[in-house]
Structures are given as structure tokens and as C-alpha cells.
Amino acid sequence: MMDFSLSHEQQEQVEKARLFTKEWIAPKAVEYDRTGEFPLDICREAFKQGLMNPHVPAEYGGTPHTVLDHCLVLEELATGCSGIATAIDANGLSQYPVILAGTDDQKRRFLAPMTETLKFSAYAVTEPEAGSDVSRVKTTATRVGNDYALNGIKWWITNGSVADWYFVLARADEKPTAFIVPADTPGIIRGPKEINLGQHASNTVRVTFEDVKVSEKNRLGEEGDGFQIAMKTFDHTRPGVASGANGIAKAALNIALSYAKRRRTFDKKLISNQGISFKLAEMMTRLDAARYLTYKAAWMFDRGEDNAREAAEAKWFAADVAMQSAIECAQVLGGYGFTSEMPAEKLIRDAKIYQIYEGATEIQKMIIVGKLMRIKEVH
Amino acid sequence: MIGDVRTLVRKVAERFKGRFYGRTFRCPVCHLELAMVDADGNRLMVCPLCGVVLDVEEIYGHAVPVVLEVELFRPQPKMRLHPLATHAPIGLYPFAVLGVGLLLAASVLAPVVPALAPLLARAPVVATATLVMLVLSVGLSSLTLASGLWDWNRRYRRRPYWQIRLKIAFSVLFLVLGGTAIALHASGAVFSASTGLVDLASPLAVVLAVAELAVLALGMVVIATLGHVGGTLVFGR
Image (cartoon, rainbow over all chains, first blue to last red; front, side, top):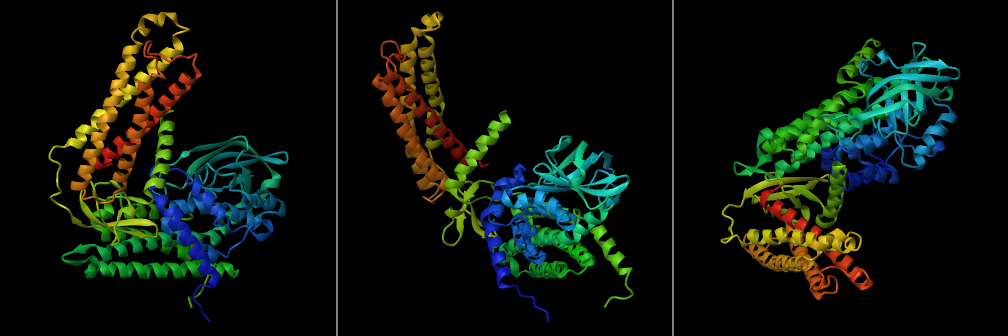
């Protein structure tokens, strides 16, 4: 039996996130977009309301949500501002490798404190010459007694300058190996905030590691497990990224719809023109399709099934829908869609990154084809 | 350093604005910041600067204004008394504050820097000039308030704009603060009529001098805010 309705608890979570978005995120979205400051006050409130760190297991102080629940919440947050939503949610990307491969001691030391006070963590994998091709990372982890010395540069690290610890992928004896590195370790240099096209509220920086000593106790799994851990994380997080894109598509649709219902042209409402109304119909349909892909990928993960293909499908499709919807929203708004005083141009700038981060659209398609190559026929 | 001060001022101003105006948005035509609460029951409002009629709706917390109409032929003030009357108090007031500051500094330095003695002979003149500037500034600001109310009535048709409400409230506050400063200064209890300086031996005189300076500083913030808000109503962002 299939059931597309939300449970009472899920409905409550959505309502709570929607209220938070309306009261805290959307009213400050433009300000943070213009100043590029990190939205610490909003994160503080999100932490207080239990909207942060939804992945941390209960035995480490968390109130864990299913991935599907998390997607529903994240879609609402991103409707207000996907940059602020990213700042709130980016902890998950670095927490999940610890949940996946961490020892009890590592979880107690790094996950539990994040449920007690507002703390941030960052996923430090990308390097200047290794983006989509993660296996090219050059950061080295050299054995020094029982410790490792990390040397290398990590780039475009979300929450990089506010993080209390980093998940780092480095090469130990040429084998990709994962580490948890406290941010106050000597030798870590945080670069300035990158001036990106969109998501200005999200903190993206370069992090340099110069002879950073990391204890063996902070290694995740064995030497050589790093690539698997880093990649497996995405099965969990990609539905969330797709939800963020869905949030943008939803905001774009709502803004375009509201505008088209009120603006008058040629002595009638804008929405009465077929050229405009069809755009809205297409936006709605694409959003629904993106949501169903997203929810299915999340639901499969929650059931413990392999969702790598579905997560890639959702991430790719939702990102394209977000981009397309933002552009159509600007088109419906006409000249006003092109001004910085209306929300459409920000949606366009913010949407673009969804086609790039956590695996570019082309990488998602490679994953899908990779899965197809392993099956005889599609049922 | 200057950047830090600017950031601080911006944060204080944003917090003040948030508390005073509530939820705001920018007019998509002239970029003037407008308060959502100024829209009428039908969500309509007329931009005080460019005159477009806006239908503003909040969608998921985003303010989405739609331009429905443009209000042409807005009544223009014949004498432009308000802008003229505005600049006299704004121009005079800082010099009055400077005069009080100089007199206070001279009062403190006089006993320790004997070389200032020839200059101190001029202190009563500075004290009187300061009082004259204060009286002119505060006196003319009542004309500014009256002409502003007239303009609001005619040009803005008494529409409830938060900028104008803020200006009225601050104008009254400025009159109260200015009147207090004039009373303190003219009473002779702060600056002696004979020397033009504060008698540091008298605790009451010192307290009143500090009070006068504080009142004048607050007045400076008020008049600067008035000028800034008034300027945005004329020139936009």
C-alpha cells in the first residue's frame, strides 16, 4: 500500500519549521544576503527550537529525525533563504561520517557536545584541484608516532570559519583516510570568506592545514576507509540537499503566483494570460516531481535500502527544477524580477549552487548510469 | 576601525528600525524602505517618495510588492518652507554643541594650563554665542515641525507613514531636549555669567554641566536621525 500523506507528527514539524522560517529566516534573508555575515542569531534560535543537528542519535543527546522528516523541515527552511538554511544544516554533512564510522568514544567527544550548546562542524574534503573527483585529494597525513601530521589545503568549506571541528579526508600512506580534527589544533589556518554568487549567508572558506597533529584516536575507521566514508555520507545527505532546492522552487512558485494574481496587464490579471499561467502550471508540476523523487530517496534511506541512485536522481532533478523555477519566477515578475529589491534575483543566485555542491549534476548522472550498468533491465 | 564603527552603527540602527517600523520592505521603484504596517486593510499603500500604489503581500515571510498604479500630480509645497526651515537647526545645533564642549574643556584646563588665560577672557562671549545658536536652532525647529505637519497634510494626505510618525515624535523630543539645554544654559547655574566657565568647586555646577552635555549629545543623535529620515523621504535610499 502506498501512502503519500504526512503523519500528524510530520505535519507538526513542518508547521513549526514554516513558522520559524516566516518569523526568523525570511525577514532577515535580504540583510544577510547583502552583508554576507554569518546568521549566528538565527542559528542560535534554530538550536534553541531543536531545528539543528537532527542526525545525532539519542544515546548521544540528540532527538533524531528520519531523513524524510529532515527533508520536510529543510524544504521549509530553504523557502525562507537557502543560504541561512545551509548555515543551519551544514553540521549534518560532517556529523554523518562520525555517525557512520565513529567509535563510541568519538561520538561522545564530538557529537554529544553539539547537542548541549550551539556548535558547528564542517566537512573538509574538497581541495583546489579535487572537487567532483574526490579521489584526487592531495592533503597528506604522515605518521608521527601515534599521531598523524596533516598538510594540505581544503577549499570551499561550508561553515569553515565557525566550525569547532572538521571532518577531513587526507592521504595516509597514499590511502584516503578520514579524520576528525578539532578546529583549535595548532596549524589550522582559516581563510577569508569566499564571495560567492549566491547563498551569501552561508560561510564558505579555505582551510589550510600546516603540520596539524591529529591523534590516532581521531581517525575514523581504518587507513584507506576514508573515501568510502566520505561517499557513503552523500546517500544520507543528498535528499536533504534536494529538499533545499525544493525550498527554492517552492519560494519561486509562491512569489510568482502571488505576483501573477495581483499584477494587471492589458486590463486583466497577469495570471489570466495563458503564457504566464502555463509557466505556473509547469513550475508546480516540476516541484511535485522533484519532491516525490526527494521523498522517495529519503524514505528508502530510512528503510535501510541502497538509495544511491534515487538520491542522485533527486539531487540532480531538484537542483535543475530550482534553477528553472527561479528563472521563471523572474520572468513572471518581468522587469521587477531583475531588480535586487524583489526576491527573484536572489533565488536565481542561490539556486545555482545546488547544481554544483555535494556532487555536480554531471556526477549525479554518472552515479545513475553506474547503477544502470549493473542491472539488466529497468522494471 | 572606521569599518567597525560603521558596522556597530548599522547594527544599532537596524535594531532600532526593527523595533520602530516592524517588518519592512523596499519600494521596487525608488528603493525607499517602507513599513508593512503602513499598508491599509486592502494591503495597499502609496510610496511617499515616488508615488506608486503598491499592493504588498507577505509570501513565506518574503514581502512581495506589486505596483498597481502611479499617483501623478501630487501636490507640491508652494514655498518649500520645510526644507528651508530644516537646514537652519541642523546647521546651528552642532556649533552650539561644540561651544558647550569647548567651554567645558576650557573649564577643566584653565587651572592646569595658565597659558590659556588670554583665551579664557573670551569665554563669556562663547557662552552667549552658544546660547544664541541654541535658541535659534531650537526655535527654528518648531517652524520645521509646523511646516512638516503642513506638508504631511497636503502632499502626503495624512497617510500613516512610519517615517513621518518617527519624524514628528523625534521633532517633539528635540524641542524638549533643546528647551532643557537652553534652560540649563540660560540659568547661569552651569556656566557662570561672569567667567563663562563651569565652577569646578561647585558639585551642582559640575553635575548640571554634565547633564547639559548629555542632553545636547542626545539631541545631536535625534537631529541626525531626523535629517537622515527626512533625507531618505526626499532622495530615497
